[in-house]
Amino acid sequence: MISRGAPKIGYIVKMYPRLSETFILNEILQHEKFGADITIFSYKKPNEGHFHPQVAQVRARVFYLEDLDPRKWPNWLGRIWNDIEPYQQRFLGLLGEALSRQDTERIELLMAAAWVTAQARQLGIEHFHAHFASIPSSIAYLASLISGTPFSFTAHAKDIFVYNLDEHMIREKLQAARFIVTVTNYNYDYLIERAPDIDFDKIKVIYNGVDLEKFKPDDTVYRRRNLIL
Image (cartoon, rainbow, N blue to C red):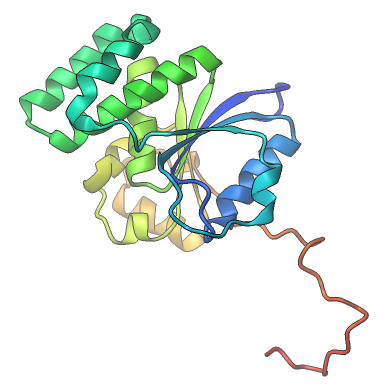
């Protein structure tokens, strides 16, 4: 994705920034280093008092979806209705299906996805990428269904080991995603064993990276031989 000059990527995450999710922070910083234009869509606002100093280096604009009260969706949906003009019929079709099944969770996620779609259209976003196979990738998937914009997601641990593939639309998303990233070979085997009908080549194993310039031994400090802790 970073070979064409300045791709516009919408990152969809559950909470940004988050102290424990250095892997997301590092990934965004590396994308920006290589020229990508990143916009972050965070499902929730941060509720922690401490953040990594590298957060200040992120250039991406951040949108928060937490204020989109599902009880007032006609109000804010009305404000973005013209912004999703090319996708209105597709959105209404998806909404009608969810209403007919009385699937309240999918209805709320569709509303959030429509809002993301409106912002993405204004910003010229070309691809959605989500972290975790749960809510963030569901929003990316539904925004892709509404707009036709391709999406991908990274599967980590709890999001695939705690939920079965029929929860959080995981099976649907494995089929529909342009590609899926996961962080271990064990995860790769786990996914293809449970979803043998998907294209295995779409699943890419990419380990969470470590900045070796930042984390390296200090040669000026004495370290006892063979001492780890």
